[in-house]
View 1 (tube, rainbow, N blue to C red):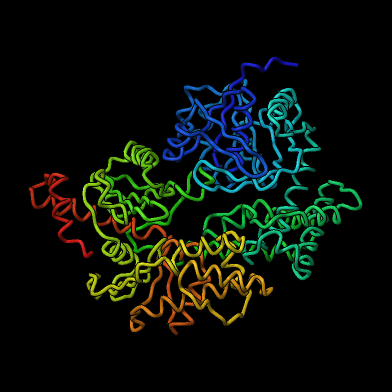
View 2: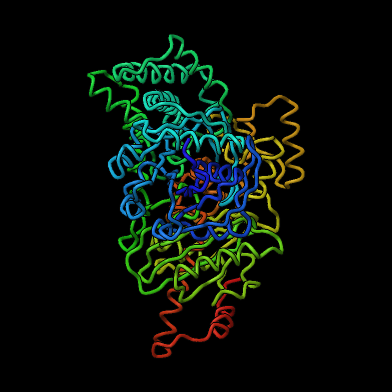
Length: 624
């Protein structure tokens, strides 16, 4: 056995897969370097580490933290473990090749068939290892991963068996930290890849298109019939590739899938959240190999093409005007904090929306391109996380001007100016949808209806009374009472045709009423729809102008899509949901900061007015 004790490992990509691997390597005493493009996330990891919850409980801190592959040159890794989505690999390989040396080993820890070929073509088969990961997780926040399941073991192999000792050593380290991993040969790993891909193919696209959790998909006979056909197609194609499965493999797959919990597969999460998916490396590869061997795969082909069509539609639906380019994720698997490749820019402008539940950040460049967006949970009296994020943003982007809005705007001196959410919502929506419109903004603790004229200025606005009923906080509390995840409410409500609403708008009394429904045996689907009907009726009682375009923004719009359907039905008017609705107000704040900076430069002959004078001036202009 070769002594690998002093080998240096780098983990690239800190989504759930990479974070879980890195945490176990660190616990094993390896001290891996971790690399991700999101500098804000990395700054939070420096101060608090990575926390795993759920099926695996750990909290791990790291010393070697890098924001680019180029920076890893100083670390000089002997092993680079890639845990990014397969479709992101082309963006990484040019920089990754700068780290190549004679004794380098590269590892693909990614879902899908043939994903290791990116590394083989760049580094050679003799340097490439492949892992099959049998755990999954969801990001609860930038540094907290909920491990939804781990079905040991993971598998690892050298693609030509020439570096078997490295595969054994990596497996030993992961086993020592409790992440059971088995070393296999180069032919065995291909079989394990096909097994895992067939399982992924059976549910991922179906759950994404149908917006079903894995448990929901396996609880219905109609969908189980589709799932079985996907598996059978995959087996037939695999056997043409000389991969043999045991006689009861189909039944074992279905038994395995029936143990799935009430959560979404990774591909489904990406599809639902309008992100690029790995469909071409999962169902798409079954289709490709089927064509190679003249095996028809109609079900896999249908799901592949449907996912591609939905992804293409998502990329073109309600995109910003010609000044804004579609987001392009470079590295990270993360759901928030996506970095977007920006054109060369003179300067940047920051908008901060300090909401009651979450604080949202948007950075734009001098021509209005969105270059960075992230959010963090708002914590009472704890501004440390905000300071970390601000510091990381300003270290990466030369922010010329910033604007704060939301509940905490007047207690946030770090910004140059402040504006109300009314101003910022109008500005953010106008960037996508100029002209007359009526904006419905459902936030954590209030509901706003904002009427804008042809010039995009606010004509009138209305707010609900000082009560959280019908807001994000209301939905969160109600979901907890019926023991549901908030993300499930919308999916459940869509399955019901229930007509009854809650009689009480008070959160306390509403909870009591819902408990009565539960004791009466009312299905959760009907309860979810009844809750949304109540919110739709509450919004309709405000002065919503249906003579103009209606658009919906806010965190509730982002996480409760079925509410849009009920609101459209209640108001008898089509409603448009803005792109990334939870970030529209922070985008508006960034746009106002850009305008204010430009005005100050013109007024002072190119010299911006001091920040404290700008704050006073804009306080007087606030609408509330």
